[in-house]
Image (cartoon, rainbow, N blue to C red; front, side):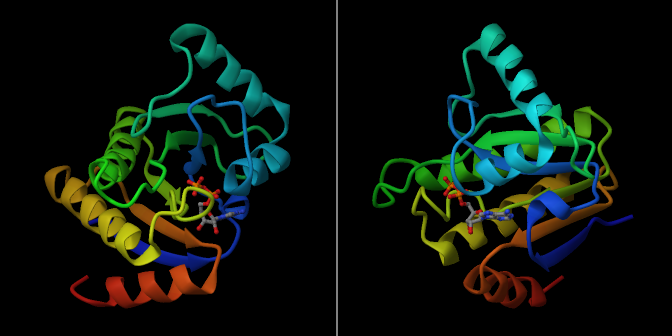
Amino acid sequence: MSTQLKVVRGDITQMTVDAIVNAANTSLLGGGGVDGAIHRAGGPAILEDCKKIRNKQGGCAVGEAVITTAGKLPATYVIHTVGPVWQGGHKGERDLLSNCYRNTLTLAVEQGIRTVAFPNISTGIYGYPKEEAATVAIDTVRDYMAAHPGRIEEISFVCFDEENYRLYQKKLSYAI
Ligand code: ADP
C-alpha cells in the first residue's frame, strides 16, 4: 500500500489526523506563526509536555523532532520539529530542512502513527524561499516513504497561504 500525499489549504490546528507537525523553535517554549496557533488552540498540556522534554534534553536542535500530546486539538499528537533560519542557502539549510521531514517521519513510524499533517516548515518567520522549501519537503517525504513502504497511510501538506498552496498543488500533480 502506498502512502497518499495530499495538499490542504487551511489551518493545521483543525486537522483530524494522528499527528500534526509544529514548526517550533529550539526552546520548545512556543512562538509566533503556526507554533503560536498550535499552543493557543491545544491549551497548556502541550507546553507542559514541552517543558518536560526541555528538562530532560534541553530543547530541540535544528532538524530534530520531539513528540507531545496534542491537548485539546482534534489530532492525537504534536510532533515538534525545528526548521532552519534561511541565511542565503549556504549554511546547510537544505539538509537541515530535509532532516526536519525525515526525523518527523521516523518518530511517527516509531510511534505507530498512520496519518501526519505538515505545515510549510521554515517558510514563515524563518524566511526559507517557498518554492525551494516545497521541493525539499516533497522530495524528502517521497524518498522516506519509498524506503519505508506501507508504514504511513496519509501525509497532508497543510498550506496556510495561497502561494504555498499553488506550489504544492503544482509540484504534487507531477508524478504522483
Ligand atoms: P517558521 O518559523 O518555521 O518559518 P512560521 O510559523 O512562521 O514558522 O511559518 C511556517 C509556515 O506555517 C508558514 O508558511 C505560515 O504561513 C504557516 N502557518 C502559520 N499559521 C498556520 C496555521 N495555523 N496552520 C498552518 N500553517 C500555518
